[in-house]
Length: 298
Image 1 (cartoon, rainbow, N blue to C red):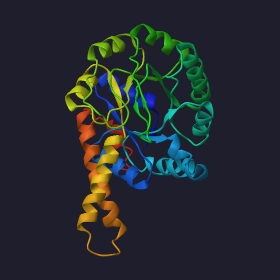
Image 2: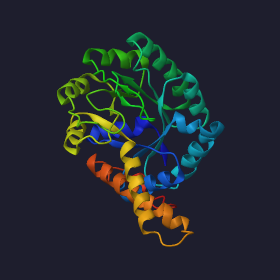
Image 3: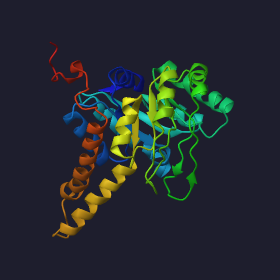
């Protein structure tokens, strides 16, 4: 069932687990994520990126948002349709019109006053429609999606958190404690001491970007100390490439069936999805009322 980020993260914070947030682009990814999350009885966040939504003259808005909205209510787990890393208000406006239940506005590269102004404007666009908003304070660096440019990390300052949330009205806050986007060149070391400070002063649930490749023990330590949403993408891409290579090495016929070709990719991806759900203590967290069989009104 389609729900909001505010709803799922409120429960995660109260019960000390994190909801996995997976960037996705195609139906194979959507199906693998949702079917695996339902089998694990876990809430899940499906995220869409600007570069994919704007592809092919903007058809991604209809294909991605339309597909996820169409299938979300087929599943009896909480499903959030989330716009990931928008940095312009026109993207927020488009997401609102396309039925996203959650948006992320990223003003983290801006000075504090400009970040507040941009984020507050996004909240004013989304909140009247019941759409949750995630902001970012501090800056998570790393490689961009084209693997060409690397940005530096700027850790989140604890004394800015409460003021930022009050001035903007965000429902969740992405913070920087040492992760990076993309595939790591060296093993990261998360600043858990800083995270404890941030969680102690934050009125809203905290989000960690750059979750792929971070050592499991550090991720779980971060969840224990306040992280309620973990963004994942690079690990998905690695798994899908592994599945594709495995299929290519074993295929015999020149006209393989799509179920076999895509099945290898889906199976590899589903394995990673299951691992992340378990890593974040998110399994069996879907509320019981959301898991009743269809037609059961008891």
